[in-house]
Length: 329
Image (spheres, rainbow, N blue to C red):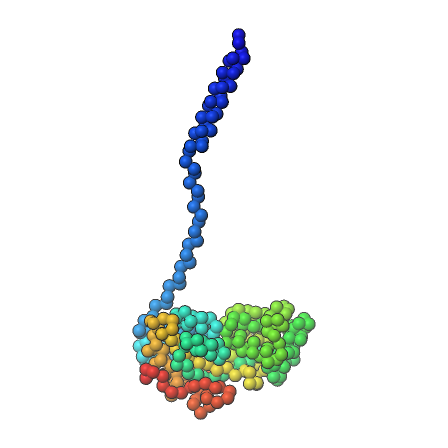
């Protein structure tokens, strides 16, 4: 038997089959490439709806936490029929809301941030309407010994003791870009500190809370820490706190409040400028000033806010406009 011929024939057959398979493979359509995923466009935030019978107010927590705005809301809605929809944040976040055109009116207390907002053309018809003072409060035992010092000297002492990890010396900061947080940073600067490099992250003594004033006061009370607070919110919360005022005098403790209408020509043509201006006019009217000035007298024995009048507001230390009806009257 000629096995060589059979072997050759079998090999040839295998080669032909392999060649056919190779040729078939080469003539198959190339596989369709997997499409590269494309990023889904981020949805644009839905603009806040503005209504002619509603006034959208973005405000600082201190005006809200004291209960003043709840009182104003009840009174104003009853008198005018205009609904007040109030969003309470720190001044920095409130200004962000206004910058997006998502409110009609700002009620805030940070002169430097207000000026930037107005200089950009985003805010109009500013009127300052009230003031009180910031306080440095802390445990009655006052482990840092700051009672009666100037705000700047108190901060210097708190930093020295805190950085050296002195027992029971803590400072709770709002840490939220609010008006109070801005005022705190101004005091640190006046005291000779670079806030970012020498205060933040300088040790466990400095607590950045990132919350509103009421929550910051509550945490400071629980920790036995010092904090900077506006007088109104402190009085509103004082019965629930183990904190007392320790530093109450000093030019850097002035706390001025302003109303600013959002410019409809800049961000959102639907801004309810008519009702924003009417509300500002009410705030600076005799009725508005009396309402603000009387708030807190019955409950705390003193007003939480002092209305600003034209005989004092234009000069130092206020340097603002608090009178003059804004259009439309």
